[in-house]
Amino acid sequence: MTRYVIVGQGIAGVSAAEAIRSVDRSAEIFLVSNDPNGFYSRPGLAYYLTGELPENQLFIYSKEDWRQLNVKQVKAEAVRLLPKEHKLALEHGSPLQYDRLVLATGTTAARITVPGADLTNVMYLDHLEDTRAILRQARRTHTAVVVGG
Image: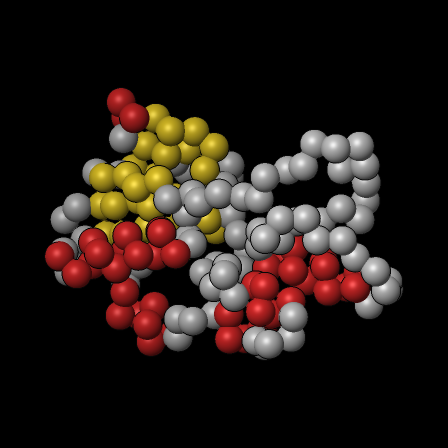
């Protein structure tokens, strides 16, 4: 049995798991992510922010979908790759041994580098927690500036 470790539980990581499962039903697949919310629609965050989509609809996989995919979800931060040993070191816990490794870590919003960019209320929309923080802040203010698209 081949053990796959996929770092990243966004659409790229989950799509990789689906592709592997479609050709190898016996594979052992681990999805590693430090996002406490697991897999959700990141493009949907903007629609959640505007109120067009409720939060629960961001989670597009049901329990049955996860059962059929048959992956082990590891809530941890990958901190070091040990390629000669075929191991992935995690922030907490034992390293994960792998036969095949997929790095599907995605990206984050480009940080702006202008005066004031480090102020408390400068926020980014990368993850569900960011969206929740923006919504909390929006309840306390009446103006906002959006940079980027």
